[in-house]
Amino acid sequence: MAAEVLPKYLQLSQRVIRILGCNPGPATLQGTNTYLVGTGKRRILVDTGEVDNKEYLDLVKSSLEQQNVELQEIILTHWHHDHVGGVDGICRLFGQKFRTSKLKRLSMADMKLSETSYTFISDKQVFKTEGATLQVHHGPGHSEDHIVLKLEEEEAVFSGDTILGGSTAVIEDLQEYMKTLHQLLDLDPKVIYPGHGPVVAKPKEVLAYYIKHRHDREQQIVQYLKDNRGKPSTAMDIVKVVYKGVPENVHLMAANNVTLHLKKLQKENVTVSEDDKIWRLASESRM
Image (cartoon, rainbow, N blue to C red; front, top):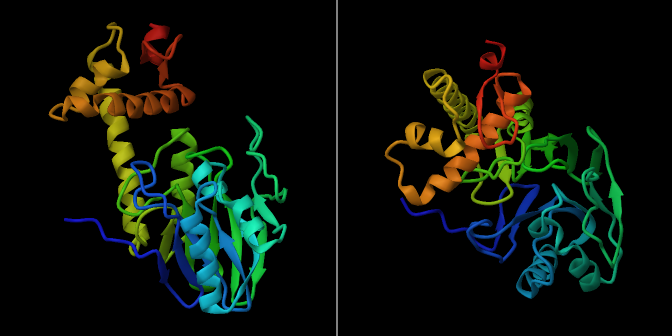
């Protein structure tokens, strides 16, 4: 089935307009989804696309003119360049130093801004504009600083890159990511507005699938290690059994996924590795 073609501008609900980042690619799909939120004369922009993308900046300007509204402020779901990069361009475009809020990165400095500065926020913080209330929920896994935003009036969630429409997310820390998926389930969203791809209309089904898929893969990995006790095992060794029948050109990507699982299991004292290359069950080291 062909992927749904996303229009560059679309009113998704009374309170939400999607403005496409005009930056299609393998990692961004049809482009980064940015969202204009609210019903009043001043609205919140969630995410901003890439650096100096003239097509996107022109689209933001025309979208605001079409609605006869202004920007109130910007909220960023996480530090990746295709979500943060457009901040300076938007500030220059409108000649304003918009308040730009995000969760602070801890492992490294955030990308520098020249036209404004970050306002660092905290978990459960609330943002308000006319017609919309957004609550911050720290949701790491895709990145350490990742947040999702619950739109209270619609029982909807802006998921950033935690959940994508029609694709799977890139993960930095699988243990944290799984916690975030369960947290999203607890938020009980009626709809998810993702960072890339079409709207997720059946979020609970999608979340349950993500969780089950990861759980099943984890069980397969543990079973492999049980079946190969005493044998040094790499992620690629596991791929060749657990991903049997999958084309070799995706084995490297599969090995990266297996490594994420192995590191999660290591945090849970199920697996051990001295070099993140050779793996075994933790119970073997006590034999």
